[in-house]
Image 1: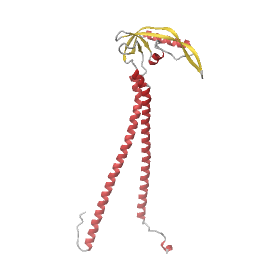
Image 2 (image 1 turned 90 degrees about the vertical axis):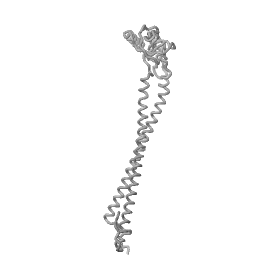
Image 3 (image 1 turned 30 degrees about the horizontal axis):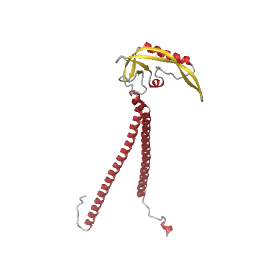
Image 4 (image 1 turned 180 degrees about the vertical axis):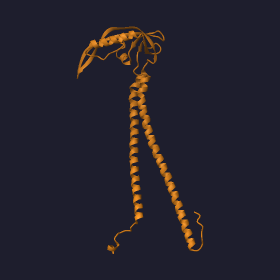
Length: 263
């Protein structure tokens, strides 16, 4: 009997088989799409979190370096100064590295510059920046110690000639009478702080936007799926009601009592 029956289960017609295969193909394609979207969303969220973490670390590093120096700086006022005197007053000993655990001594000239503050007429000693002020407040510029002291001397003399040529120079000074020195430039001024915080801020905003866009996309996808499910459920209920109405109409016609199809 089994030889005559052939197949073990019910056979589908050609149309039903094609429909069944199409449904299987659609389900598999949907699963692949959902899996790919899920992987992409995970990578995007990971990228956003990495950008936020990097920006927080940059804020921490800048906070303990540049921001702290900017907050501790007393040269907060800016004005113009007139160069009164620019001359080499002494030679300072310094040491330079000549290899691993090898240090040799050299000398560099100490350029001393005095200026008159145009805003108040005070006479102040001018330094190049905060590093020169911390290294040697008596000298305008502290060059990097080198073996060739002649080159350092020529460089300092060139700076002195430029200061004499430009009598009016910008300067930063401390308000009141707290400091007897002024700075030509500030390493940690408002402009430097802005440029230092600009890129970490952009990274923080970019990472936050990436995560927000991924979450918004997930929410809209879930909302569309719920709306589609409600529509499919309503359509199924409508088709079921219509089918029951037709079945009732056919049954009534068979029993001789005509019923109008209102669906």
